Length: 251
Ligand SMILES: Nc1ncnc2c1ncn2[C@@H]1O[C@H](COP(=O)(O)OP(=O)(O)OP(=O)(O)O)[C@@H](O)[C@H]1O
Ligand SMILES: [Mg+2]
Image (cartoon, rainbow, N blue to C red; front, top):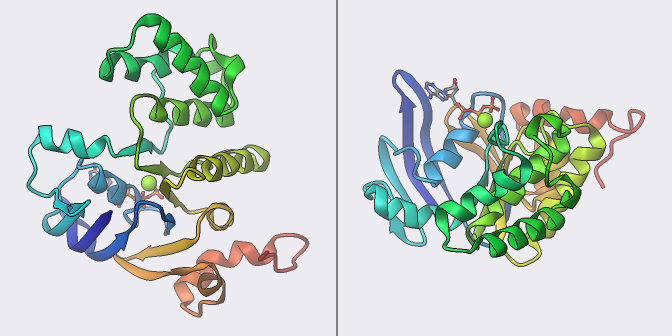
């Protein structure tokens, strides 16, 4: 569904992607790993057509999106449901209104239908009781859940994109979000999770890509990731080796 062919991208003088090439199928469960500033969020923005590559080809369902007009890109964006890095709820709207916003904006549903749908979505992600709360009253975990509910509101996405969905959450909340991600993918719709938390990536994904210096340094399955001898990746996944009283916890 997603194909990057020799994609290059820079923010001015800052070269972020130098030669990114990979393909991801719609039903795949992929984690993009890498240190801070390696370009993980940039990849999601490119997929959504929020940024355009400097060169190379980026296609979604076989269509090259690099030269598309805004109107055409809107159609492509509807194939994805994205949860941005900071969750990004509207501070001045309560939970119900945050989720209803997309429904009002993108659908012609009546107020009753919107009310019904909002309740259904919030219940689906486990925060059905938070309807009237303001974003500032939510815990980090609830905030992410509401952001996920909102991203699900308007469309039936083919694929989910999550940017650091568990960062800043305590282990219990992080685990709950991982479970939710797996649950939402049961329908056969895949996802890309961007994260620097290897433990969470291992809980949800089947394929792992590691970004380094603007390229995909590693692309493989769980066992390959755990056994890799690539020094940069070993350093990165060292956190696994200190889990559970110093024992290696890989199951
Ligand atoms: N709008 C922007 N203008 C200029 N530089 C930017 C912009 N957005 C990101 N960058 C730079 O591009 C690089 C890649 O950014 P990106 O946000 O994709 O990294 P990331 O891998 O998601 O990092 P993190 O793990 O910290 O979220 C970083 O060096 C960042 O400082
Ligand atoms: Mg990022």
